[in-house]
Image 1 (cartoon, rainbow, N blue to C red):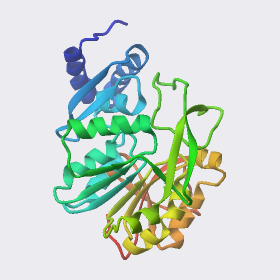
Image 2 (image 1 turned 90 degrees about the vertical axis):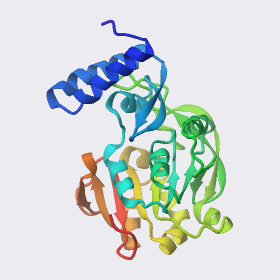
Image 3 (image 1 turned 180 degrees about the vertical axis):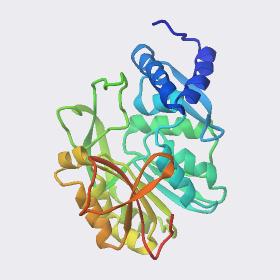
Length: 298
């Protein structure tokens, strides 16, 4: 297969694949194109129509940005719900901001609000800041550290292996080394969420998104006072493999939220949700949105 490498031709091809991904039979053709470029191109191309008119640097051989380039999004269902939960003056906390998929989407809606974006990896922070800068956002505050239940410095690991689709998944950085995610990337700083909120006199938190590859439970434990105080909508990933590597069952995340009164829903395509509980059926990978009866509803 020989496909174009010229940026303008790739952007034209992208218009076709984005349309194809919406049609069941044609989606397979679009996926073949995506996987071809994942294996044969390391280009970085700036798109200017992410989530409307946002600019986003897309590396064609990386999982998240390969999806954004060829499909138009990577986390469509979650982003629809985040957008629904936010108002113009909301405050959004992005814990595990990575390259900014959620950070940019939230910032585009918050004309009078603020995004707090936390990314412990220096490598990812540079990419996050590049995406913020190219959009000239002034309502995003970035912090080059993560959260846990105690302050500390730990190694963070990446996956050196190419995935089944030909991409590298740099969205899967983790503090918990496994046979697959085993390449030491750097040392990262972790703080306690409640301490950050209290020290910085944060007086509002409407939505809290947490995606930290197994460290979700320790983040929640360190954020208990803030969650009790603000009762934000919580968007959180429950990845059973990552949680097991961290030494606990992923259902513990669900039980933690249930104990403090949150109602849970699993997130699906196009923002559809289904009721979820720690005692019911839980998939190996669940994107969960949680709302407290006394807080904001979705």
